[in-house]
Amino acid sequence: MELLDWDAFLTPYKQAVEELKVKFKGTREQYQKTSLHTPIEFVTGRVKPVSSILNKAARKQIPLEQLADKMQDLAGVRIVTQFVEDIDKVIELMRARSDFEIISERDYIQKKKPSGYRSYHLILRYPVQMIEGEKKVLVELQIRTLSMNFWATIEHSLRYKYSGEIPEDINMRLQRAAEAAFWLDEEMSIIRDEVQEAQRIITAKQQQSR
Ligand SMILES: Nc1nc2c(ncn2[C@@H]2O[C@H](COP(=O)(O)OP(=O)(O)OP(=O)(O)O)[C@@H](O)[C@H]2O)c(=O)[nH]1
Ligand SMILES: Nc1ncnc2c1ncn2[C@@H]1O[C@H](COP(=O)(O)OP(=O)(O)OP(=O)(O)O)[C@@H](O)[C@H]1O
Image (cartoon, rainbow, N blue to C red; front, side):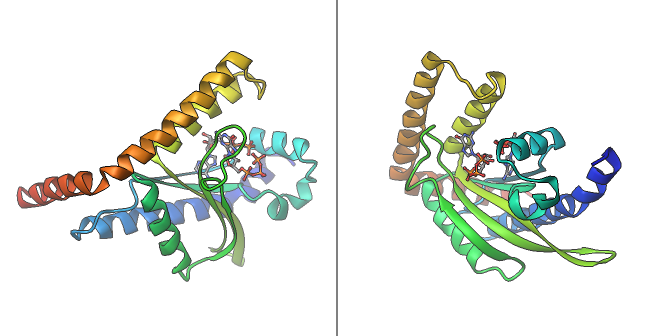
């Protein structure tokens, strides 16, 4: 595929990522207007870079003609939460929506990956309105806490730096960091009610001074 074709091929994925980011940020804003704790801390998204698509296609032996069906993370959106309990709430919110179909779920929180990676993944089939008509694209939605996100971001950078072959001593540190990230989530869950009450007071004060 040439550069121009990539641009055309990825257009609906870009559209899907932009639309879903707006929608999920909108959900966060709705929560902020209530006295309820918002389960969404922030939302990010990206279209997979072409170099990364080519690497993954070669690694997984996916023919380029089958990318749309076989590579589920061409469009990726991530919802980051404060607490592990918020992840369940976000999953509930996603299951109640009618603007996409959830086609699969993977729980890497109950069952973390050997690397230490924790996150909850949903694969969505999302309809994008193109000038040629509706096109349904797959979107990978990752839901994770701030602590899980911190670990995954650091691990991703190291994996990139060492082209997947992370030296043993650093790997050991990463495993320990994964355990620390898990305990951070546990500790924060225990004081969740206190934290949420403090945040409610701060939000109410900010709204009064507007
Ligand atoms: N940082 C980090 N991210 C991970 C790890 N495992 C999975 N992910 C993220 O989760 C996505 C989906 O992973 P999987 O559910 O394992 O999907 P997969 O197609 O079986 O495997 P990948 O080749 O990793 O995409 C990846 O593209 C990454 O963004 C990990 O060990 N570390
Ligand atoms: N679902 C997602 N939502 C938001 N950002 C994502 C998502 N998946 C990956 N990213 C981010 O996009 C950037 C580039 O991701 P890339 O697709 O190359 O990584 P990857 O998903 O780990 O790779 P691979 O699946 O090919 O091993 C990274 O910063 C990664 O954290």
